[in-house]
Length: 113
Length: 114
Image 1 (cartoon, chains in turn purple, green):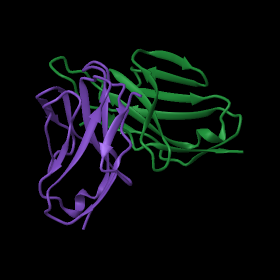
Image 2 (tube, rainbow over the protein chains, first blue to last red):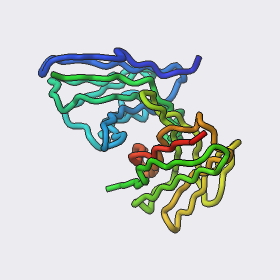
Image 3 (cartoon, each protein chain N blue to C red):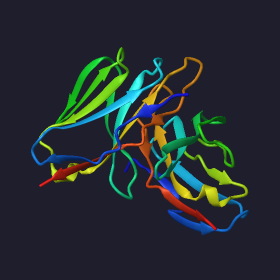
Image 4 (cartoon, one colour):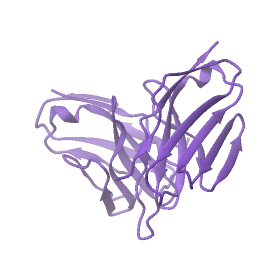
């Protein structure tokens, strides 16, 4: 089954404790992206990647890091999480840099206390 | 800065009627336009994409694009209670040297009344 998977689905952590949210797709997609969704603010892009070893900032990259060492994986790293990073996070992928028909993972609900 | 505007709603439509959802965008260079449906607590699901002016139909859904007016809309015919969801408009611009990301509107909450 073609899909985007994220882990963990739910995470409660404390301020400053480094964490990684994994994202993997099995569709051989070139493009992958991370978003956060907050009430009243909608979906906002954090980082995106057009191919292996190619990443770029989205609209709200502060406090986040990403890497793309393999085509199928695109982890999101929070090196020192803060409460304002409490949010619902989505990973997405699409077939090519010219195709923005993005398919979303199930989401990760993160709470930072 | 790219902006995508949608009426947040809720938009209430009787079952069987046509639901009309609207979206405007600020960047004249935008080239690709998408409608996503998001049920509460779930991830966005792509339902329509449109790349050129005019109408595009897929089943009960029709997307309409007018680049001169910077306007894109989604029509849902024969609305069903299962269409009740938040509909997100998304826009992107391919900048030649690389791909820009999607910019989403905040969504319109649609309620189909049985």
